[in-house]
Image 1 (cartoon, each protein chain N blue to C red):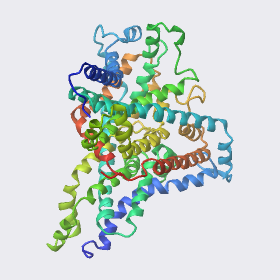
Image 2: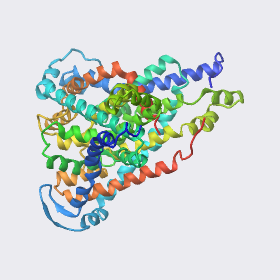
Image 3: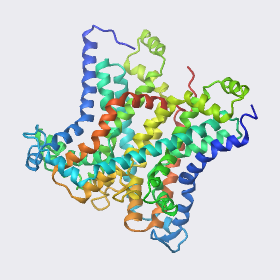
Image 4: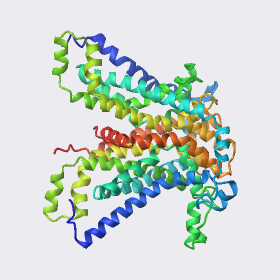
Length: 293
Length: 282
């Protein structure tokens, strides 16, 4: 067998993939770091500035307010989106086949639409004159709550968050549901015989046994939410003012709109470290016990 | 787990469950229905009566949208990007996964962890360096400009999943092949590839969804009129014509989304299957 897997064969199988991955995902970080030490306008280096770009970022108001917005959206996703998805999955497990198939079709639908489409749809939903939200508010007599949602700096970010959470609620629900399907039914039978109710079963059996899926969904949702960018471009382009810029949009804005590529790179690297820290934390604290059936 | 059927309480409960699930289903589908509905209305009806059914069908919205977006061209672009990234990503991933799981290499765990990094870096964070890299390599204005980075970023999840499949294949299969004098390349193509076909198909679906909708890289790399993806073309259309005619907006959305809806309706079950397999990996 040793001859069968010759060293040459090993290299032939490994090198192309390793090279492509290393070039675009890993190597790309290094020029980014070098650029972050420069005053770079996207075309040429205009002088070395050391760690000045990092200092500028860490003392910039927009950098920190964009952090608050980024993590605000993340909290929306983690505290509203994921629990609702989990609840929907638990419900989906106990309903009949027709409803289940309808829901499955509908749930995955938003996740295949492009962000340009979703952004535009929600511009309609939040439209001041005839959008769904304001029409609804007027219909139930809450005329005072009618708002120009997306041009109000206080609510623009929340609207983007709503669109984002909406897009992935169904997707995550289906992921949780497939996790539920992998739990052996004997567990439930035993618990039902002991007289446990829905909430006890969910708390003691379902959710602990969903650990792996929970970890997968949490990692995906965290990376995805932190990396959210397209919806902002389409819905508000970061505005009004800078009131809906997330960290990534600030990075884009500073580099591609203001030609401060060095500064943009510094933001990118700081944020990259944050993303890796979050992924490691989730990996460390969620589902660290091995489950054996 | 199943509630005792027949009792009034459980019937009410089942009804309530179904009602909530159906309400959510409507919530997921309504915006698209609304866009299609708007696409048939003229400017006056679209803004004065956005929710009612169209009083007459204004197909000129579609001709207007078709005239402003080069739909055949951007569709073709998106298909090339998607197909290219899918094929390249899966071909390389399946080879790497085979090397990592079957070839008894030193440090294969370390290498697998190295590839995992790709899963925790959002692609948009590396927008600037990838953009620079593409320019430096002279790839701008070619299809490779997006195919290569998309393939690279999707390799992490593909490799992990295909590894999980390879690990379950008994070693005896290859031993038999080796004894029969079959070389490693032939054994790979003839024996191993067919065995991991489900994983490859599944992962292709995931890469397809990702690439078709990717926005951040496409928006900085493929803004040129000839190279745009459908998503970017739609975005450029919305921002260039500061649109207030929601009939035309609806038509543009419908035209560009229809192919996806058709594919989705046909392949919905495969997508769900793909999700369950890809999430099953540790």
